Amino acid sequence: MKWRRCVSLPIFAVLILMDIVFYGTVFIFLDDWVGLRSSAGLTNAVIFTLLASFTLFSFFVCVFTDPGGVPSGYFPDIEHSDGSDQESRASEALKKHCDKCSTYKPARAHHCRVCRRCVLKMDHHCTWINNCVGHRNYKAFFLLVVYATISCLYSMVIIVACGVQKDWESAGTIHVKTFYITSGVMISLLCLTLGTLLGWHIYLLTHNMTTIEYYEGTRAVWLAKKSGQIYKHLYDVGVYRNITMILGPHMLKWLWPSASGHVKDGTSFPTVRDSL
Ligand SMILES: [Zn+2]
Ligand SMILES: [Zn+2]
Image 1 (cartoon, helix red, strand yellow):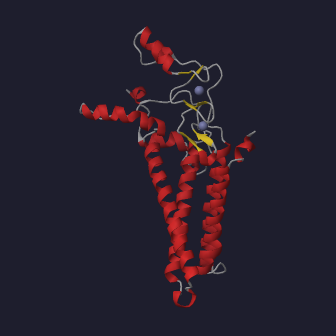
Image 2 (cartoon, rainbow, N blue to C red):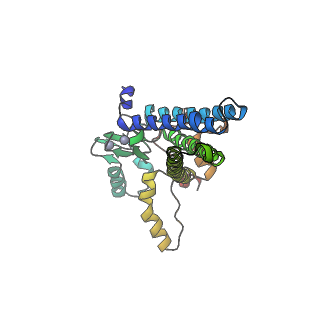
Image 3 (cartoon, protein in one colour):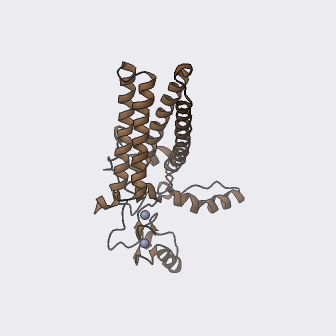
């Protein structure tokens, strides 16, 4: 049952946090700054509500979309694997075998100990969405981070603008000042955390890399540097193509979390070797 995935304390915490940020930004700070009945207040409230709605929508798409499991009866294409002889082909096949699931796993798939199964193009298991981030829900996860970061920055601007313009002489009691400072610090920390996460996933997306592959590849990068070469990730087929493989071929659908018709079966991916 997909709905059972919602019964999780971290998911509840995220929803509460979203509620607090939304309510505080619109009904406390924006109202205090320009008033919700003014055209500036109304315009900002509509824009912020739209951003918050997209964040919430992306969040639920992440939670309810299956990241992708290994198709039943899957067997690796050993004939086209890297090995040149029978022995290396056999060891390649063994590497692709999951002892816990007792099945073969495609390239880029990994076993998740929390989900207790192999997940296609696994990025990481995310406690906050109570789901794995993998082949089918990575786009929604990326957009969740994008919308959440923009929403937090927007909120921070409203809080700071409100604080700067406030008449502290007449309304500046110690409780109000403490509330403003605490809110400003909290939203700044949230912006910093989400901004760092966004920067990291922009790097991964433009290099067509998962978090697991990044850490697996650090030794390969070190070895390449040592021998004076430049390491190139196997699935990095160019920035634009990398982006379209995740967000989709049509730019108009890039920002829609559930537009995932372009997502293939996840058992094979284009590599740099294909274009050689
Ligand atoms: Zn497994
Ligand atoms: Zn998982």
